[in-house]
Length: 627
Ligand SMILES: Nc1ncnc2c1ncn2[C@@H]1O[C@H](COP(=O)(O)OP(=O)(O)OP(=O)(O)O)[C@@H](O)[C@H]1O
Ligand SMILES: [Mg+2]
Image (cartoon, rainbow, N blue to C red; front, side, top):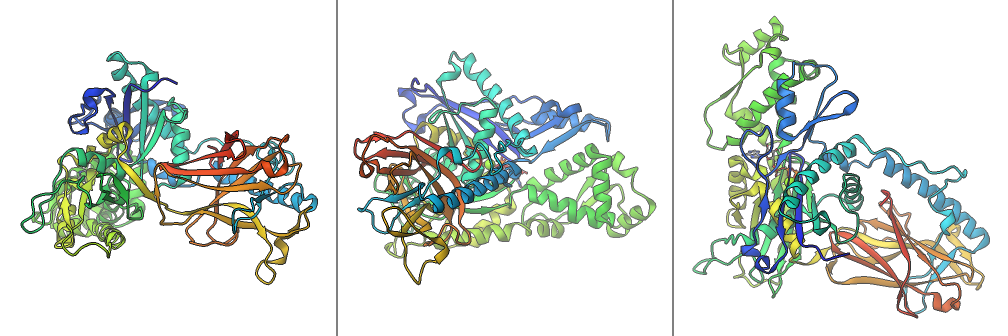
């Protein structure tokens, strides 16, 4: 594989999606002077923007008729209720739902595990044990490859479930962004194979969600090879951008301003987008590189939530019954889209100092559907106004406050995480960096500043909506992250010496060496909250118990517990399987396998080495979501 000549970032957003790219060359080595190219001429857009809408217009048989602003423009001009058309938007967050496919694979894999374990306890031929040098880590339950995933208990092939609707829509969206990026990059004289792509994902996506994004990207035509497609966490990408933009918080007391890459600087990023608000926190090390110090948190508190509240609160209140809103959405979807658009425009400018009510004109198609009782109700509630939805500042504030206090709570949690007691009293206050489109909101900015007065500097880069996108380019060019905090405790399914009176009898087995062992022990590799260097690999050594084991199969588990004892403890979740082929010509003791985990590149990377020869063992990793 040749070295990439181009890095291209793709910000896959709930509300909007775009791409930006840079050439890897000497002139661009200096991040502050790096030239980033982007595209702003999306068909149908009302104003030029670096991201297009994450929307699709589907026709008969779910054929994609248009995407982005063009999809919305065409949806709005369709006759209300045109049969066979569907406007789809804001589907990214549905990728977080475990798809039926993943559940099914997990369930089937779980069944195999049980079947294979019982076989193991019967014949004792499938166990592996840790090397004597590793205290505490004993054997690992193992399956032979044949007992793995290709057939289920009954010998039936495991059918691969079709992708969920959110996955299908994401594939369609990603393939169109990829085409747009390729058109621009190849017209500049580069080839598709010159590109290293970087797609952004919310920090709150778990390993399985990230695999879903990878799977969608591959189906959309993006490369699958390691290093050709990387994933970046959205808030982390955004800090990369803010650092090179030279954003500087004011200095403490009479101190001069200190930039965002200064050693010791603590930065808490809040990426408030359409779907989620994602938080992450970093401190710069002596070399100015970022070490993640907060534990990533966030939630579905994005600006789209406000749109939902407009429909299910304000409209439901004006029309008197929520069912009518639902009915209108079904019968005149384009007119309702038009009304939500008007709300969206009003939402953007709403601030704590807004004093006047704002009228949102009721589209004719909606108006025709309103009966006399609803009109009477409108007149009563809105001082005679019946042709518009009149929204008072108090109502707007109430809608914002269904989201904003939750975001402030998340910030407080994160600030508590980054309060390092050993810091000298005169150390600078942390910086709260507001990025994502919702950060443009005057109301949100005001709330942040009020809430954090005297506790943190609040910084809003001039282009918060595109910080993640540009940051993805910088991240793909040269990641400035030195260490991350583990979001889970990670380990593998293993067996250790049986401890009478502690371990349950049903987990006890005796292998052919006569030693009583306990299966299903959680052999911990990383503890939740551990700061793990992005370059560092965490490893442990394992060895088969029985001489005729041809392949070690490790089940990877996560949990939020610090010290789980068994992989069956509540909260333990199997995320994948690592399969290592053994060299049967080696003596049993020489068939040790050292398993390495690396957390550096946003996703976990696994490899295995045979310590005796130093050779990399042939390893396959299957994440539960069919990686
Ligand atoms: N002034 C504003 N007030 C409130 N919301 C705003 C404002 N400006 C933009 N937004 C909202 O920001 C959102 C778009 O932001 P952004 O592009 O960061 O989202 P996204 O990346 O698509 O979503 P996510 O990151 O959650 O997947 C839209 O929902 C839009 O309504
Ligand atoms: Mg975003």
